[in-house]
Amino acid sequence: ADQEDKPHVAVLANSGLGHVVPLLEFSKRLVFGHGFRVTFLVVTTVDPNPAQDQLLKSPGLPHDLHVLGLPAVDTAFVVPEDSRLLTSICLIVEASLKSLKATLIELSCLRALVVDLFCTQAFDVAAELSIPTYSFFTTSATMLAFSLYLPTLDREVTGELVDLPGPIQVPGCRPVQQEDLVDQLKDPRNEDYRWLLYNISRLPMAAGIFLNTWEGLEPGALRVLREDSFYRQVPAPPVHAIGPLMHEDSNGEGLRSTDIECLAWLDGQPEESVVFVSLGSGGTLTREQQVEMAWGLEMSRQRFLWIVRKPTDASAAAAFFNVGSNKEDDPTKYLPQGFLEKTRGVGMVVPSWAAQVAILSHPSIGAFLSHCGWNSSLESLTKGVPMIAWPLYAEQRMIAAMLAEDLGIAMRPSVEKGRKVVGREEIERLVRAVVSGEEGKRMRRRAREIRESSIESLGPGGSSHASLAAVCEDWKTTKCRGSEGELC
Ligand code: UDP
Image 1 (cartoon, rainbow, N blue to C red):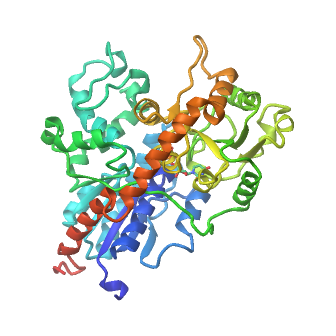
Image 2: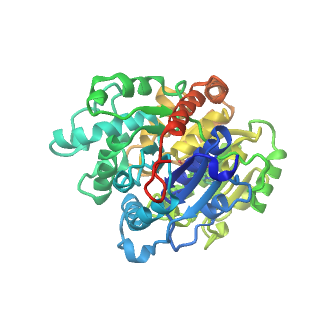
């Protein structure tokens, strides 16, 4: 069919990599699997963002997927210095979405708009234009259940959540330990908390919520969201589990020279022998922790591939806004003296950024030490790789608990009393246990079962495939309004 004849959907992502990746994959699926034309709207800033550019400017994107950056926001004007991560993201989004109405009018005849979790201002704009609007929730179903309960917690708990006497009870979910709480909730007076609450409180405005998960991975949380009386009263919009959505670069055209070097190095290592250490798009370690990490890896005598960043004591997400930039990135300047020499041949160190999915797909990878971002967690699960959970910020501690305690595919480090960092001995122990111990073997078997269930869910007749197909059928039969306001 002619491009113009295809039903048209717009997808809106904030600029964070962990959001762009799954929303872009979602868009590709609409194009390849369901015959849509998609305009991918993305919040951009004037700052360089090489990793984002690499994804969005890839020559491999399909013809029917049109990437349209919203006018670039000047962060220096919009984000006060010392703003926390979520506040910065949301202020950028707020500034960026000022142009959304005009953009949507221009696009005309949209069957639906699908918006990122932190772009909920778009609900109002789309409502004015009578465009059905869906949310894309970028983390787990368990987190969605927790999030939908958060406004109630906020109303009913006097004082702070961290001061409650026992774990936090969430309808239908495993109680949440205070130490695992979403970062922003640990101090409800901060602005990050207000932004989180703002976006979450608006979720019920969505016509439906897409989740990057699948029935076989989180059956309990999905059932609860659909059936539990609390969520029926909210009311929670219909949830559509359509995952896993992952950035697979099947012909390798997105690989940089450092990626090719990594993969070649992995080719020379024995099967399932390498621990891959990577902390998401923005994660950074404190200086003290980075020293322990380095010597812990060295002491483990296991092979490792470490995506390393300049340590900082200022924030655990210090690299977030310049993802993939090699600025100031010479590891010899910030890794402990002697480390590179001592580990030559056993370990490989790559500054800043590498093609994570391609690495996790390599048969030499035996374990993944990850910050437990939801995308990274899904990538590890769907490649059958057991994990060392190293949560840093946002909801990562809750995901780590789920990976370790519910799914049994991750180990969590413990911190010695009186210390702020995970010691090198503990790192050594964990790396050995996961790469070459019995515990690691058990976790790998479990991760492989999960991988099988993810493949099933996406195949013909699989639950995720059917879920998305049902919504797409709905969209195809929806009437929409053209640029003159006429129904078409
Ligand atoms: N990623 C990557 N290379 C890196 C670091 C991250 O390709 O060196 C990708 C990773 O595969 C994932 C995304 O960036 O798809 C990060 O998303 P996630 O939800 O794991 O964490 P976030 O960055 O949002 O905290």
